[in-house]
Amino acid sequence: NAGVTQTPKFQVLKTGQSMTLQCAQDMNHEYMSWYRQDPGMGLRLIHYSVGAGITDQGEVPNGYNVSRSTTEDFPLRLLSAAPSQTSVYFCASSYSKTGGGNQPQHFGDGTRLSIL
Amino acid sequence: KQEVTQIPAALSVPEGENLVLNCSFTDSAIYNLQWFRQDPGKGLTSLLLIQSSQREQTSGRLNASLDKSSGRSTLYIAASQPGDSATYLCAVLFSNSGYALNFGKGTSLLVTP
Image (tube, rainbow over all chains, first blue to last red; front, side, top):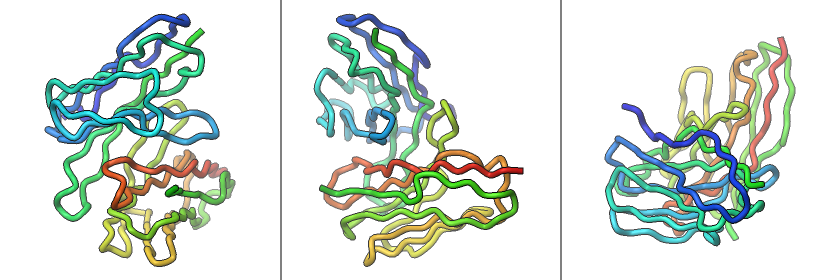
């Protein structure tokens, strides 16, 4: 099992450029999400999905789009990159909340993004 | 707003010591609590998950406890080693917050030889 795979690992963009951060999981998890990690701010939820075709906003969704066409993939799109989006981005997945709360969330290794 | 706080922010101990990391949260209605380890420049590795109905979980030298009524969890590391040096994150899944984990800002641990 590869778990949660994120690509690319590093990326440098210029202000105004767009790009897609990829996330794939091979554990047949219903739930997937994107977080950003910034110094002094901790991890904050950007968008999440509870299944194919269903997405919703988290705490900091502005400037980002998501879609979920398959169970395995949950890409994050930056529409017009801004320096404030310089961050480390993590994708996570888990089974649904059924089962008494014994399902951990699994994280990818992250994408380190710099916007110049 | 539901919040998760970790104290201390940083900790330095000599090798071999037993140590305790603290996590507090503002709402006792939780689904579960997870402890993660993060090495510099790396992703998050799940260490332990405690369900709402449980009081503690153990894995090797690690023991995590949960007291929902007081809004506290502790991560106990026995016989610390230099390889334990990392940032430890506490994350709470509150019952009414869907699937969004609420993270503390972490405790940065340094174990010196």
